[in-house]
Amino acid sequence: MKKIIERIKFFVHFLRYDIWRVTTSELSKSKTLLYYVLKTIYLSIRGFSKEKLNIRAAALTYSIMFAIVPLIALISAVAHGFRIESTIENMLNDTFVGQANLMPLIMDFVRKYLDTMSGGIFLGIGLAILVFSVFNLFSHIELALNNIWQVEKSRSFVKQFTLYFSGVLIFPLLIAVSSGLSIYINNILKGTFIFQVFTPFVQFSISIVPYLVSALIFTLMYLIVPNTKVRFMNALLAGIIAGFVFQAFQSVYVSGQINLTRYNAIYGGFAAIPLLLLWINISSLIFLVGAEISYTSQNLRNFDYLEDSENISDRYKKNLTYFVAFVIVKRFEQNAPPLTIEEIVSEYKMPIRIVNQIVGVLKQAEIISEINLDNGVSVAYQPAVDINQLTLNLLQSKVETKGSELFLESKSEEMDHFWQQMIALQEKRDKIFNEILVKDILN
Image (cartoon, rainbow, N blue to C red; front, side):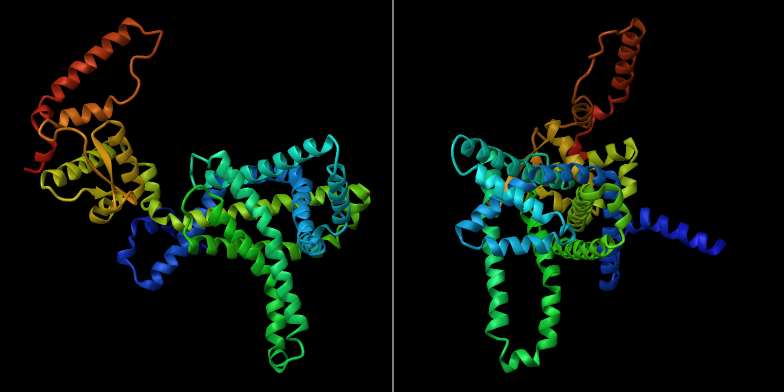
């Protein structure tokens, strides 16, 4: 038992510290894949707690409940224009198979909603509510994914409107094409010899179609909705995982409803509503966990030296800041091409997370400036001040004094005296720094 506990502690320590200190170049291909999987799982679990995904899922549940009838109404209206409303209704019944008792009621609401909008003053009001509800839902979904991807700026209103409602218009067409393909397979190919030979394979393919459709929908959401560049393979990985987990949850949920007779006895006809809330909440949670997987799998390099970076000492971070400034200045002095963040990370084996922070500090302090390379595709950095005037003292002063100072209203004489004394001590300490240029540190 003692050995088991020690091994568990070793594994936990390995996951928290050691695995993040090993670079890809030090590993074989098999170990690289294993470390990739372990890191992604660890970061996804960590992100679940840190990003409070359960709270975000609850917020999405409210938005979906608010918009479910208007959204289905809008999709049904588009489907009616293409004369495929029955196909869409069948698809919705298959999707909400766990809500078989509630779907007729929802569809009845949808029909009444569309009838109310068909004329008179309610046409404008109903259309406005419909558009607002759908737009509000998609904007909340984008906000949730942007927060996971740490994107601070959302799309403009015009881009959001265009993206969201283009998706709503295209969705029924995709369902119609899918349905047409199924009809073609069943009616045209069913009597052929090839179909008879491959019947087991075809049956298996049909059984996994819901999993593939879910995976495709999740993949497209992870790929398109965040306001940042998401690599297809990372979106696909997350989409497959989330899609298959979602369908597995559907199966468990449907089979579990059989054992909820006692629950139905308590709530009666209202039992379907809390069950729908539960289904939407867990589905939202699966969706957000998938988004976390897509983010972590794409940005694993940002988490090198994870625990060390989060607990870095001020002294070490300050020295790394001076080193990055020295590298950029030295390249400029030697008339060498300016370095990008990726090149600094690759050349000096530094964590990209820390380099990003340092470059941000140096930019704010106006020590360096960025220049566009390759027609704006990538960004490199060069000195923003005369390198023959950039002493260690000036560098330190610009970095340390960037921001607000002396803003306290209730200052005391003792505090003022202390401040002046500290400045005097720092001036004595910095005298030698004032004589050394950054470019000459190693000379």
